[in-house]
Length: 515
Image: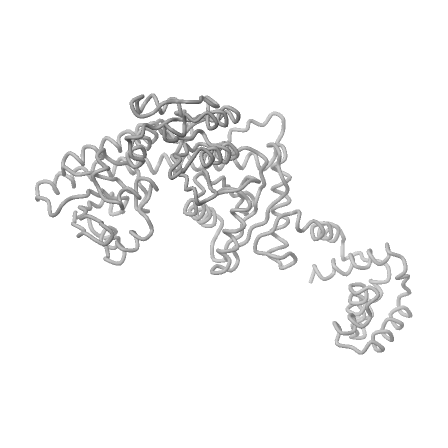
């Protein structure tokens, strides 16, 4: 763990100065570049860099948004960071404020901060061990850079950046975007895929040169990393052109060593992920005062969301799918677990990635191309003790959405309370032991092939609107009135009694649910 003041000390006072010390225990896990044109300002664990701010008013607005999002700190140019109004705002919100010297470029700041954060990072779970593998990956990146005399990144087979060498500020804009975003930009992936780079990586063990490309992409020497025939990742070096056979041989040897580290890292990640899922399951299943909440959740209130996927996926595949989808769309730490055959997510009730509003929009977009993608959110959980009841509501609501009894693809319990109330009442009825007028009408329909139950249902669903009920049944209103008179002869009803009307509607709904 490293805090914003610790980070400043690690980088050095020549570049940074802590102007306001906020919550001293706020961990920094990532760097977030704030765009003045966008509302997003990071989330807990982010150190926000204030780019493109015009004046103190812009800086104050950014600080207020960062405080609302519980960011770990804000870095501003020194002139803005020392403005009295800006300082007063940071002090009021207890937000760590850091001044950046004017001679330093933001790109250089990103290299420095990311380097310190990544080298200090360790897997979250105590089961997963220490930060040794991460430290060794950075050391291997520096060693590979020394071999080829060029900046190097180490990436996994999903184009995510695992480590990088020093000297990245001498590369091209694509490499800048790769380091800042922690993965290769989508448009660059598309360019490499069109040239067959990833097919070659997946099939070959031999290093190869990728020529320069559009938008200033410089040539790259790529070394596949494999173990037992499986493609684990790759080494990418930004070079000026072809390199010697001796260099490629040495890099291939380095790739063999790197393969062992990637296998170890994957094993640690799998253990950490399973452990995190198990801990979240425990909290979602049942909470008691003796329960130890060993789950790193964002600030409450939360909601538990039951997630549905297209039918061809089993539960483990759904869990993997939702995790990768969430990360791809900006949710850096998805809180996901499977429980009793349902994939569940714990989201915040605020804004931004990992919130219900964000997830609802994502599900609506996904459902356009993948029917069966659904999300049902339970009620607000203001503390861990409320999570099991929110989970139960979410699972119940997801069942209604899947059956078409509630509108999808994304729905929260406050929008469907009436549907849940009726559902709970209906499911408590035993349709094998029905009594009263409906039982008589059901027997009559079976014995005489009539449709009196349908007629009664329409009459009840359109109270005081016989013409609408007749239209629904494709009958003339006089025919409907005749049927209702006949129904009252077979099974006398008092439809002026609201409780009798409600009881009949619930019984009919229970029969429909059974069929």
